[in-house]
Structure formats: structure tokens, C-alpha cells
Amino acid sequence: MRIVEHSRSPFESLSKASRYVPGQAMIRGKRFQYVDEASFRASYREIFIDQIYDFESSSDEPRILDLGSNTGLSAIYFKQRFPRSRLTCVEADETLLEVLRSNLVSFGYEDTEVLHRAVCDREGTVVFNREGSDAGRLSRGANDATSESTEVEAMTLDGLLCEPVDFLKMDIEGAEVDVLSKSTLLRNVSQLFVEFHSFSNSEQRLSELLLSLENAGFRYYIKTQFCSSKPLLEERHQLGMDLQLNIWCNRNEPTS
Image 1 (cartoon, rainbow, N blue to C red):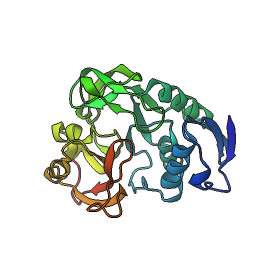
Image 2 (image 1 turned 180 degrees about the vertical axis):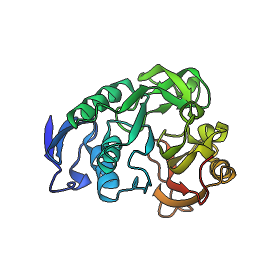
Image 3 (image 1 turned 90 degrees about the horizontal axis):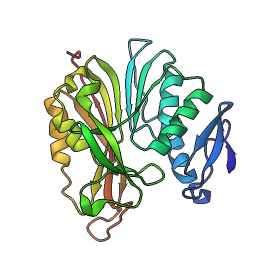
Image 4 (image 1 turned 30 degrees about the horizontal axis):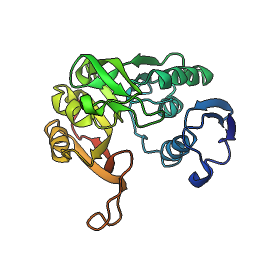
């Protein structure tokens, strides 16, 4: 198991990082466990250097939902940014969930609510395909199951939106369109970040996602996270995806 210092040097070259190699990193003097060195370095850069989840709040106790918490980098960022925040983390992968809980204890954030659930467009039991890192996702049918598939309890987004939410972060690997389109309580959310995933063998449905955001009163801002530099000439795929987008949303009106 490798130990990497991340308190002074934010991250080493990703070319040096190994896939699916667990280890530990020191972040601001605290020990953080990870399950995949490469995804840890990429996520650390996005979250702590680029600060893609940063937002402003008039409250020092903002309500934050972290859907797809993985091993907890985003949760730790939120708690360092807003120490008194009311944070709920939701993670479907049981292995990652154990690491998430351990990291929250290591950083002293035991007051964080942690739920072992898959966020879905319905309640009940669903099949979740574990990937071993940050790309686990809901199974899209019998032919999509793998040796790492497991059953997990599902919950809807509206089950978490019974009160105003200051910031909603959603990274649920392809379930985002169904989840957002089925929600009737999105107006309870002030600010939102969603990672959009386009699988090369499926309809993209980006317009459906954006329409759900528009109907809920959001303005959105989009940045490409992954795509071929010449998509008309050369296809590129990453874990079955041909496009990933980061989408930030806010509103000028108060939540209701």
C-alpha cells in the first residue's frame, strides 16, 4: 500500500498513477484511504485544486447532499469548506462505503449522515455493477450484469428533498437523467452540480436532462470533462462512455 503526501504537493503526474492500487494519502495532516490511485489523483485535482464543487451560502450550516460520494474526497471538501454543514452522503458500492466511513472518522466528521443506497428513479432493490473505483453504476439490463454485480436498496431523489437544499452534488454514473426527470421537488434545491454521462451504445438524452433543469427554474453552465478532440473523425471511449460533461446550476429566485 502506497502512502502519498498531498498536503504540500497537490498531486503527482497522473501518468505515474496505477489503476486499482489502494493506498493512503496525507491531506492537511490527516490520513485518507483510497482504492484506486489514478482516480484519487484526478479527483483530488478537480475537488481541491480546481474546486469544482465550491459554492456560496448565506448560512454557515448549509444543507448539502453528496450523491455518489465514493471514498469521501467530496465530503471532506464540503466539511472543510463549511464545518457546520448538514451533509448527507449516499454511496451504492459497499466496499467504497466502508472506506468513506473510515475517512470521515479519520477527519473527525462523524456527524455526517452516510446512506448505503443507490439513487434511482424508483424505490426497491436494483442491480449495481461495481467497477472497483469511481465508475460503478446501475445495471442497464440482464446483458449488462457482471461478476461484480450486486443488489442494493434504491431511493429516489425526492426522498432527500423534503427540506430546502443549499447544494446538491450528483455523480451517479449514468442514472442522472432518469433521477432528475422523475423528481418533483427540484425547486427545493438552490444550487446543483451534476456530472452527465453519455454511453456510446445508448441514447444520449442530454436534452432531456437540460429540460428537467430548465423546468425546475435553473440556469446551467456546461464544461466538457471527457470527449474525443475530433469526434467526427476519431471515437474515444472511457469505460463505455463517449462524452462526460460537468454541469453547474443556480437560480435567481429563492427555493420554495
